[in-house]
Image 1 (spheres, rainbow over the protein chains, first blue to last red):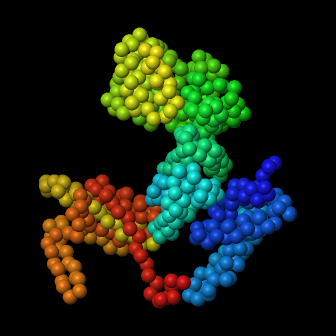
Image 2 (tube, helix red, strand yellow):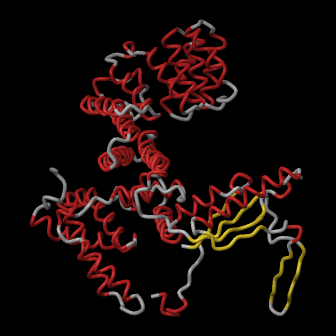
Image 3 (cartoon, one colour):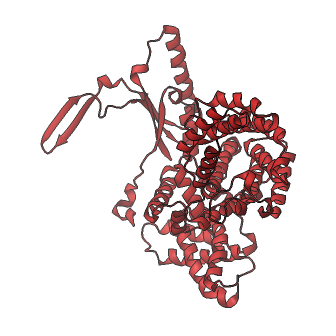
Length: 407
Length: 125
């Protein structure tokens, strides 16, 4: 914490822990805005007290109790008119939050509500980051390179729809759980990929999005244990994120997997990712996230690129294509087959996808690579040229440019 | 909460049916309506005649303009509705998804705006 002001420390801890208080107060008050305002009030109290008294042992419970008291203050100050009965009910409900050790963790229902399919996908993402992750509107706007008022508006609309359209504040019942959990996983992975996929712009903020997604996935895993795909998603994120420092060079450009300095991979995170994947597999119910994690694990286990178990990766992509068919998965499988059995085995598989993925630069660069290895230089050159036309990432463009120059 | 389930579909795609097909179709709607009644969700519901039977009316000042046809020409037209009363949006979505209309076209789920008339003008506070 050296070099950070006390305010920053309070801010960091508070942000991490505030989701619990927001979640509980929404349950009790049935009102997102009142809950958030009360928690914001509690933050001001924390700024006053924590620097002198130190961060409390259980900050989540402290924030919940303090926010509860601030909510009571707010409600008492409210003009009592027609809403008197309702206010009294709310005050009584707040009184029930008393004993610090009895405060339940309501964040699971908060996550399910924020990820409800009746909300637009970008609203789900923003609302989850705001209420569960405790990010400010400004931080979300910076992370998504969007104007702050746009994000603020999105949050207001989402909260209004939750209240107005009757979206229930609950963990879905058994018959809806699988479907809704898949939706939660999709939002979490979207947040992760938003941080992982781009290497441009506000770099630090975006790495934070990966941490944020991992942190929230851990919460879901803890509060809803034994869900194979949640565990698989966590493993996938950890294994991908373990490569973060090796993914860019000193100039900030993307470094392809085979060229990465594997000594810069985060091996503690890899170990955790591998253990997490084992835990998922033990549950005995395969799924798309677990398969992707298993593929990432095979890369993570290879000390050098040439040690990669390509036949196994090809098999896993085959399984993935069977349960979640997509041309991109088939392309990855074709590349793995080419790595395992040689370019002549992979090329026909890529050619099968040529029509469907004609606008996708990675199809053309993969095809070019196989043609090059087969000595079909003229065709390889055409394919590199086509890939270069379509590629936008500077590192990939530089790589393709080099290959084209070699032909 | 009360919700209106609006059943939209493309009128021009409604193929002429044999007597048997039409009987099967009718039975599906009847079964669905019975299901809503058994769940105690049903409040109201009806099918509408096609939009070529529609008349639009506007009043501007003292002028009353009556025109032939629906309010808006859209790809899918309102063909019927149900009003239901359920606990929350998840139940309303369940009701919409089970409606035969969901397979023919699109179901729109709209919460009913409830006004507390007893509280009068103060309810805004």
